[in-house]
Length: 282
Ligand SMILES: [Zn+2]
Ligand SMILES: [Zn+2]
Image (cartoon, rainbow, N blue to C red; front, top):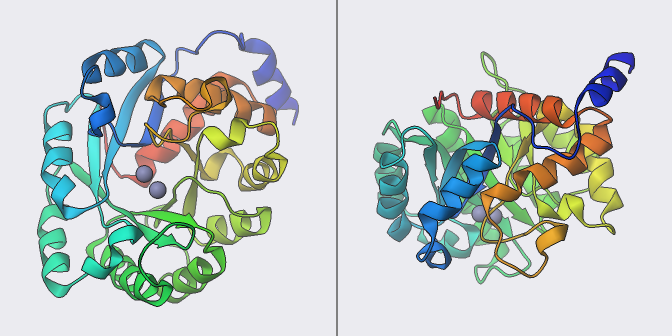
């Protein structure tokens, strides 16, 4: 505690720190960035956000997302997945294709994959079966999973318990529960089993005290930062397009929760992200 207080004293909280942030979940290939994609990346760099992982939701997005990462080796890697909206497309053929693509050097994770009972058009049992197969594949291929979960935390806990009954050996994380929106109890469940939690804009919303409590329990060593751009803007941009330059606002909210400085928040969450994806980005 004494050390944490010292850290918060030495960091000027209004400036972005020299430590670099990692945005672990972006959709910058979204058409909403077609007009100004390079300017968005420049703004991110100016805000200290020097690394990101671009996420693909469906096989038709995989080539575009791969090309995005390939064109920016100093900044970006990518993850290829099958969003629960498309879980009924999880065939043997798709898994074989995913296994081949997951070996490419730019591809640092499988995702996003998961369960979405809020808006998903696919029946829960079909989503569960697809997720079981995809997570078992992640385990067999040694690839981290980027898991999406909305209004399905009880079922996600069952599937994770079944596929990953114990924490990983030789690495820290099996994957990340991205845009974590579960309870403080869920936070403990996943972090104990070797999952990182992704913190997004909603952690900055005044009414989300329970979510901040979940991240307080998860602690800095199990948390990674993400924007999910263009979705989920933090409080200062509610209702607008999100972009990676807003990562420091999310970090600032967490620094307050953990009672550490912004610089330390950047350092720890970036170290977590590099371990999660087992990658080096210059
Ligand atoms: Zn998602
Ligand atoms: Zn996403």
